[in-house]
Image (tube, rainbow, N blue to C red; front, side):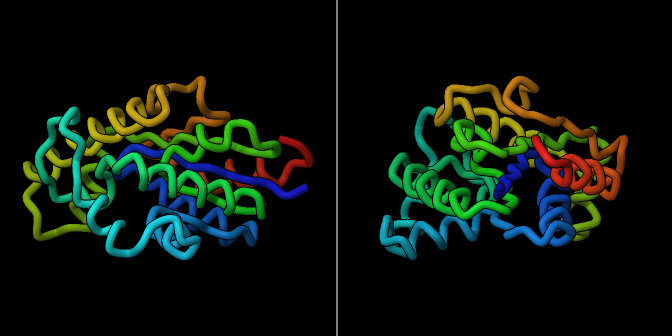
Length: 198
């Protein structure tokens, strides 16, 4: 039976890094936002021009300005969200994949053999990781952006799925990378995924 792992994460908690490592260790296909958008374009759901147009818009109800990290987290137009949802489902139908972000846990809630993971971390841990990744940016700016991204992800999730981002009831496994470390998170996910049933 083919399996599906989804990873939702707080910004800076290492969910993408963990997802890539899990996919590599298990020999699964890895899929993130860029790949999902590309799949939507290839499927003919949207043109590259439409994606660029929609991905630059922020719905008025979010009331948030442009930010340094908007390219990771912008709330998307309804049409682009639906195109991405369709692309996520197509990836999942092939199975043996790790899908990071874009509310894949809710989109795929009716699929069998899924493991939905949420990765969180303390603000200090996440800030330290972002300082290492973006050494030219001030700590104050990074802290503000970290909080903004968390806020956007919560609103994005609520707007498009009606669920609460990070609420344990929507995941099978919640991990705190700041306590466990990224390697241990990878190990735990792989151990559960390698079991006969999940």
